[in-house]
Image (cartoon, rainbow, N blue to C red; front, top):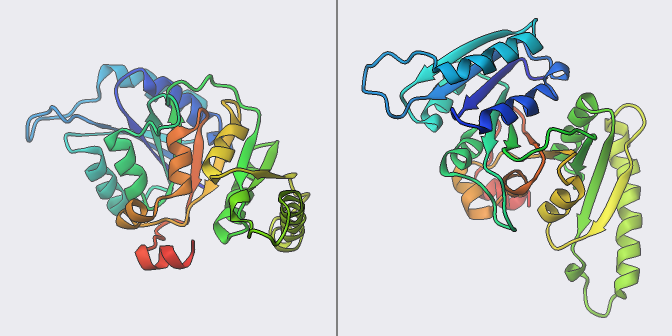
Length: 282
């Protein structure tokens, strides 16, 4: 699934939690090679970049937890987005792992670097918030019946023993006079379960996880609330190019920036859409 994992280390307290989040799922990911990346932005041009001492314990922890995987370090003086671009070009990782600051209130906790990485990555990204308590009670998958959501469900089924799918609808989209709110809610719920059985079931082997249908103004809010801090969120991404993501927004990006639990944003390697394609698929 994810043979090569690229982990960006910040060199601070967030790193330990990030490693815990990665190791919670790595044994089931088929990881064969782990690249521990650190950017020394304060290094002089051409200066040798040794592995920082604070990084070595994390490297050893990864080697101990993943004895069959090759763990190597990559230290450079360039900015993380530039290192990501070079690594994607020269090595071709299948998964990028980053940490994230704690989130307070309803605002996303993206720093500049984390935001750039998730927007410029052409592969799946695992985002681990620094205040995650380290508990795992399964996963929540955002389900909108798209190919990306169905693929995210298939991945979640391989990584977690307990999975719940969540379909969100906005009651404000009800046409005035056509149905009462209760009728609209019942109709939407029944239609979602029918689509789940007819569209998703044939594409996902085995017994389907339960589907929960919730009314909320935004899918990102519903997913974050349902996951809490104990359930990973697995969200399929259409892989919007950076300019498209900036203009159109991204549910997966909003979820990853606000969740109190780790978020795996899944996307097919190398696929990305521009503004026009993004509008068509909204």
